Image (cartoon, rainbow, N blue to C red):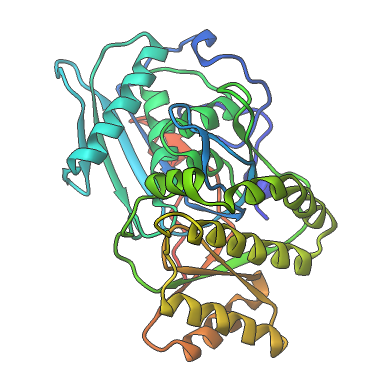
Length: 373
């Protein structure tokens, strides 16, 4: 766990690592600070153990269910937002090149929303880069919009609690709300904009890591947004999936509190499989898992039968993440690599929450932990 990275009172802005503060006033009612000319943020992906799949409100990105995740110290997104003095339109660059049109429009709308909250009509230049695969079910949108929300809020001078920053990040990508925090985090579904926010799980006593199996680093064939909508609208298994969530989440919270890794792992694996079952019931079916995915899931089960405790979880993509104790991660990686030659495996330890800096505060952005390959 990364409790040392959490703070009791932190805000978006120079030399502050955002981790967690109470309170949930409406964002429009916050006092605005002096906007920075430029701000940089680094955020990390998170993988849900209790999954988020499906929205009750697509405009506000209010989910059907609450979810719980682990932020990982791998594949960070680094985003710099500079307020333009004269530009009339936002400019969005990804790895130094213009971002594809559809993604750029989404970012521009998100920036417009932040500008409205700040009472500013200034356009922004966004420069972003992601260290991992994009659109492959490895939570690049979570780290991406968490970094963008933090950097843009600081640049526009918004003074937000970590809770409100998670609400803001949610408006870009639901899972981004959880990447505001390090370690384990829970996204409370809520019923409206004010009540749908993420917060850290401060009473977890499980030292967990993940071994990421990169079955395919390419973009998935159907976006999470479209796949969620199809599942919600057409799958007969969506309603049971939603109905079981409160019980599953309560069991997970209790297992984390008791430090029961076995129960945490069992809940994690069955929750992922049930989510994919709901997708398979959609019309037409949503099938992200491939033969390579299923082979890895079987290999993880074989590890358990052999006495090495590990549990599979999968998101909107073919890649399989294996939850294990941190001390077991090297052995799990070695065993999976032997079972699936040619597949890349990356060890990801529990990671930190988002961190921001201004132009004269570069040291506030944390070092990028390297993945163990």
